[in-house]
Every structure is written in structure tokens, then in C-alpha cells.
Amino acid sequence: MRILYDGRVFQFQKAGGVNRIYAEVITGLPADYHPLITGVEDFGRGKNVPSHPHLEWPSFKLFRPSRFSVLLRDKWWKPRLLRQLDLFHPTYYDLTYGFSFSDFKCPTVLTVYDFIYAIYPKLIEGSEGVIRNQTEAIRKADHIICISKATENNLLERFPEKQGKTSVIYLGSSFEIQPPLAEQAIFEKPSFLFVGGRGGYKNFSFLLRVFARACESNLRIRLQVAGAPLNTEERWQIHLLGISDRVDVTVYPDQQQLMSLYCSSVALVYPSLHEGFGIPPLEAMACRTLAITSNTTSLPEVMGDGGIMLDPTREVDWVECILKTAKGGGDRDLMIERGLERVRMFSWKKTVEQHLEVYRRLVS
Image 1 (cartoon, rainbow, N blue to C red):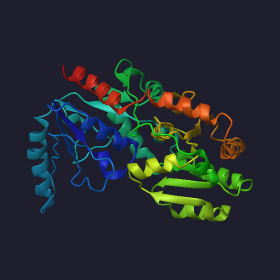
Image 2 (image 1 turned 180 degrees about the vertical axis):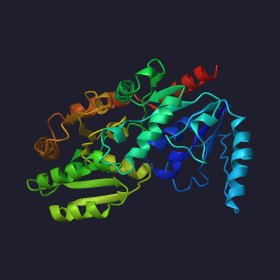
Image 3 (image 1 turned 120 degrees about the vertical axis):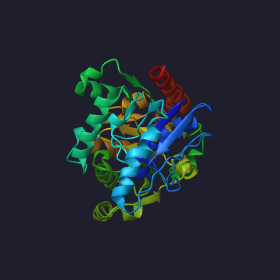
Image 4 (image 1 turned 135 degrees about the vertical axis):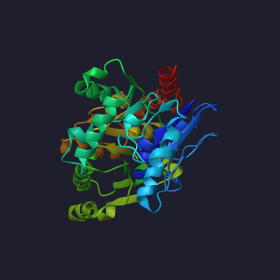
């Protein structure tokens, strides 16, 4: 089966849950499949790089005169590529190389991650364009994969005509279950960890305020941040809150570094307002780290009874939970054991198998 993955997500995301989906799925395809990824000439800049014996990266570089170059691309290169395909699976809602969804005559499967742009349009710059592209992509797709039941519910509320054309396929954790560390070392200087993007709906500003309040009662706690470098606004807020000496940042950690951060932290703190799935809580549970998350959208599906879930608008609840967790004891060990049971329910192997079921059904 020849499957074209439009590589748009690899162009704008260095690391993250979305490009990890395709890295895992493409790597896990059977050896007789032929995956192709367009729009990416250099995978070296990314953290999640797919691998497959038949993987191809068809590309077309524009040249001068640009008018002739575009004509050659659209009239020769694109039709030649399209004739070879059995299935199209874009990684995002807008496409590379000037492709449109109507160009594809083979079946199209689309993954919808969330509806964050539609729900919080004022929190994210460029929301209008993403909403427009997402709407078109959903309407054109033959089948839609949702990464949680919460996302599927949001989809069917907005597009009831897609009833019967959706599948829920959960994601996985790339981490094996880790052996326990000595608790004494973890609690000498209790570290709390935040992982991933920090855009408005991730509620990172809320977490900084919570952490600053907790620091007033516990002088030993620290906040570890894993992801992009702090931006000017974040650095200024940290300065104003007086916690500059309590916040450490690890910029785009690799898998081994990230695992080490989880294992050396007393808890993951994840007060996101909206998630399509939520890989960090799953990773935390695999590393025997208590996960403290919001009680919203898809996070209850991931967490089950394997961690602590709080209202992401109530600072006082988060402050109390952080202070209690920093002391150790209580239900922490029980929560961690439940988390280990929970994480065993999710795996990338299962994710790949369920993608293959969808692919085969569409192509047959």
C-alpha cells in the first residue's frame, strides 16, 4: 500500500505529540508498505523522525523563473505523484506544495487532534485560518481518526454528518515502565515538572502564579520546565513573581533527558484548559511520577484513577495539592501504582494496529 503523508506538521513542530504520532505510525507500518512524506527536505531539525525501509520524501524545489517552476510542479510533478497513491493521510489541515484536498482521488483519512482553535480563538494567534482549514479538511475526508472520545464528541457536535465515519484511536507513551527511585533523594529538594507547549490554553501563566504562592510556604520546591525556551513574557512574569531562582528550563530535551526529568520529579503539574489527548500524564505515570492534571476534556480518559485531577481555574486547590505532594506520603504510592496499571492500557503498538485497520478498510 502506498500512503502519502503530507508533512506539514514536521515543518512547524520541532517536537510534540502530533509529529510523534506519525513518527510512530510510519515506523510501525508493515515492511511491504510504501510510505511517502511530502514537504520536508530536512528531518534533522526534529526530535521525532520516522523510519521505514521503503520511506520516500518526494520533494520539489522551486526555481527561477518561478512562474515556470510552479507550472512544472502543478502540471507534471504533482499529477505524477498522485497517480501512485492508494491512500492519503495529511498530518495537518493545510497542505504543502499547493495541494488541495480535491486533488486526491484516492481515499483520504484525516486525524483530528482537538478543537482548541475553535474553542479558544482569542488565545491563539491565527485561529481563523486554522479553523477554516480544519473545517474544509473534515468535510473532504472519507474517514476521521480522533485521538480521544472527547475530541470525537466535539467533532460530531460540529459535524453531525460525519456520524459513522469516525474512529477513536488513543496514543501511547514511548517510555518503558521505569524502576522506582529512592524517595529520599526526590524529596530532599522536591521538583515539579511541566512538559510541552505553553500557549494560552496550556494555562502556564496560571501554573506560575500557583507555584509562586506555594513557594511562600515551602522554600525547597522547584519548578522544572521542559520544552521551548522561555519567551520574554514568561521571563518577565517569573521575575515579577519573584521565583527566578526556583524555575529551571531544559530546552527541547531528548527522550533520555525527558525520562530523567520525570523520574527525578515528585510530580508532573499539567493545568491545561483543553487537550486532545495528553501524552505527558501518560509519560509521567510510566516513570512512576505522580501526575497532577486538569479534570477537563480528554484528560480523565487518559488519567482514570491513576493520578490527581483538579479544576484548572482554582489556584487554591493547586497550591494545596503541590504543598501536600511536596511532603510525600499520603496516597502518593497508591496513585503511582494505579498510574502504572493505567499506562499499560496505552501503547504505540496498539495505535499502529488500529491505524492499519482503518487504512485497510478504506482501501479494500
